[in-house]
Length: 164
Image (tube, rainbow, N blue to C red):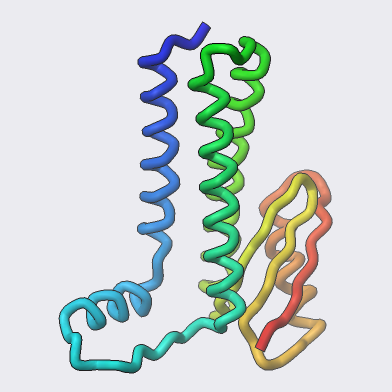
């Protein structure tokens, strides 16, 4: 049985891990933009290199993930929850952390191989990729799908959507 001290450690460790993965995978452009906006307050215009849709999807995905984590943490900390419910919540937390790592890996792969900004959403065996690109190229989409599929042993249902 998991005691409260171990539960808090696991919870805080998972949050720190997700935040550190997010920080490590931030692009240099984003970091320099954030630094520039903090140091010079005279600038009223900030140039964003990614598509507004990609940014909106990332923010919405982060908010959804945070709300799921909070729900699962509440179950873990609830004294009236059964051991089975707590174990299920813990396993779901682990799955969320694993999916976040995979998302970051896929986004990094697309950035390095194809020089494109992307947003990745993983639900079970389905991987949805949204690419920030003005050109809608089926050959590029097929190459991206193959690159992602090479990361897995089993077949995944992968879709690529282009957003300009």
